Amino acid sequence: MDKNSKIKALFFDIDGTLVSFQTHRIPQSTVEALEKAKQNGVKIYISTGRPIILITNLGQIEHLIDGYITTNGARCFVENHTVCQCPILRFDVEKVIEAADRDDYSVIVVGEKHLAIHHLTPVVEKIFVEGLGVDSLDFQTNIDDLKDEDILQLTPFCSVEQESELMPSLENCTSGRWHPAFTDITAAQADKGKGLQAMADYLGLNIDETMAFGDGGNDISIIKKAGIGVAMGNAGDNLKEVADYITTSVDEDGVKNALVHFGVI
Image (cartoon, rainbow, N blue to C red; front, side, top):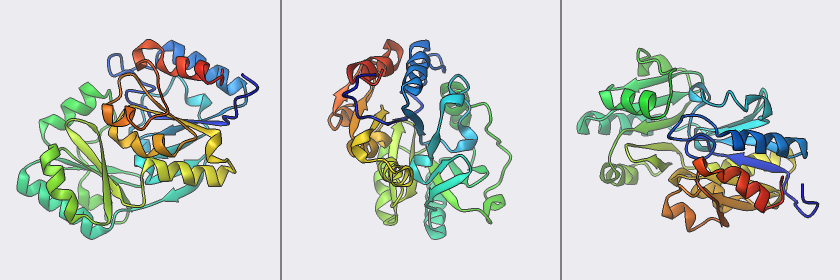
């Protein structure tokens, strides 16, 4: 580690950042880079739109992870301690369900412990199972089964146009799109950037001691908030514009190259 590096904590998006969209695996160069960072005393955190129940693709590095920002910041935790949890108001959940029924699209409803799929369509299975490598989706849970749980995130499989029509009616919510087929909706006080701030406060870190990596629209807030924000080479232009540094793509050793560039490893 470069003795001039002040970075103490790394925050990683999963899909398209740690995990390749092509192989559904973490490149070996990334695994080795994270092991080296850990040996250098740097902590490693996940920052994802996925709820914990759908984080099924980090087996290669699970032993290195110190904590999680999940559901785009709606639930953050370190070991068994919940750092923050920001549910969506029930009447906003109902508005999204009504829109889905009206416009005929699916919504994944994420509770604290379970998730349900409202109005299941073939596109959900195609994208999550084939496209994102998720093999743990339970297609049987009903939204009524979540009535006693906080709802942390809604993922409607709607177009950009449908999203722009829907969001003005949800003034207590925010949305972040990291896939063309769907967007993630959370409470307005939840995004990855706010999750980073909550984690830093809890861990006693200064923001300038943090470094975040991402590739999607839902990473904009954390890339802007972190001491150093790194966009992957495969990131969208809207993320690259706000990043401090643009590395190579996930499949071209992007994580390793950035950590070497900044002297973290």
